[in-house]
Image (cartoon, rainbow, N blue to C red; front, side, top):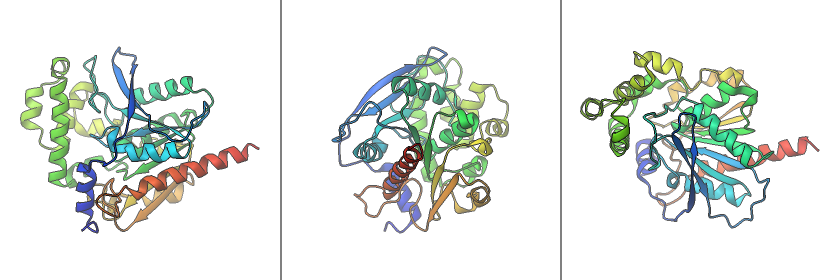
Length: 316
């Protein structure tokens, strides 16, 4: 059953971990007097040190800390401190200003990473992006280049720069699930957001991700067209400036980030961009059994551990 990419994708979307994961939530104030939520993993059996590396995890479009709990646990078991970055309004967080952030906007990301660096000076910070979360991570790494404050990154099921195509090819049932979750987020924060968004119009008309982005983010950012919006926030807009090793993991049967849109030429051109492709795995899934954990998570953590070991040994 799990040999089918569509089945893998929907299992990954609705799967609830059997294990309970515990997090401590912290709210970080932003420049516009709003907040973003950080969820720090609190279930480590390994004693963490002050200089333990920090993994900053960017969940999928409507994901939260629970959805990446297994990655947090694996990282903590290898002596790393894990923290989940929730975009504004996501992860059941609240808003203090009428501003949301698109997945390609790096302002909050930079603020969060600078805060982590100030809280744990001189530690190695690495990133893991899941699905749409990869767009945020790619955008940050490219926009800030060698000053990104990150040492390495992993992107699981990234969609690269094919966002307009993605909105047309995404499976409709998958898209509907995401839209329902996104609209519920708007409703939770309607008292603030109705000042800048016509929420009734969004609820009534936005039945594609493209229309949702136009009605919400284009209006919020003051950009007239969807095409102009995604050109500005294309996650691969500054890919040639990425200065750290980045591993990307894609499945060739992914119905969302389809194989035709994997930029194989970029991985041949830039030596710090690494690509792993597998025949089966769906989108953000990679399960071997229904109740198991994603093996891509273990691959991501192993990669980060070895990169950090290489960095440490190169300084000896």
